[in-house]
Amino acid sequence: MIKFYYNLAPNPMKVALFLEEANLAYELQPIDTRKGEQHTPEYRAINPNGKVPAIVDGYDTVFDSNAILLYLAEKTGQFLPEHTPGARGKLYSWMMFVATGVGPYSGQAVHFRHHAPELIPYAVNRYQFEANRNYAILDERLALQRYMLGATYTIVDMAVWGWARLIPFILGDYAWTQFPNFLRLVEEINARPVAARVAALKDRHSFKTELDDDARRHLFPHTVKAAS
Image 1 (tube, rainbow, N blue to C red):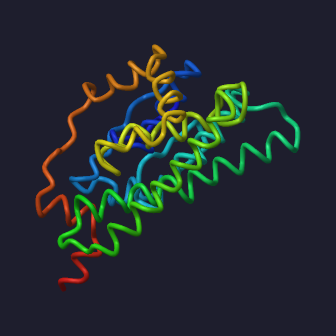
Image 2: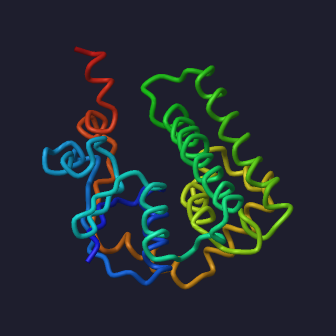
């Protein structure tokens, strides 16, 4: 059985969506990042980067959400485009776009807008602009076709869905009005029965919600070094 190291953040949730979509048996291993559990030697042996998600599948260990999606899709043969160089090229291009653009810029936009110890207008504007630009690219793509790779639902759609749930938190309450085609995809995925099972994971384990000094020390260790 797959051991799934997770919390309720966007990246673990897109892996949870695949596990449910593919009907794979998995065992939840909660990692409370606000308590610093991602920094323990035991977890760092699984994910040297000290982040979630990660999986242990028999003798195989995989970390990084997009790497996990690719691994599970290749292993099961599910939620992939046809096996041609052109189709796989599109798959890899969009998966890397999510990994290097959508995720990082969304995360930094959240950090500087909501969690930074001081308001830095340049940083807020920079990351919100780039996050908005990345979502606009997705929206333009989805104006042309039902799913990110065409007519077939794939792991790329799952990858973009993970962060989409936070768009109002990232960009503001108005933001969805800018991305009607992307919203259509997100609402379609949300209507799938598996999405309800993913949402129910919040009731399986309790995670710390307070962003107190101790949580900040674990989540933002650079602030500790800067103060020392």
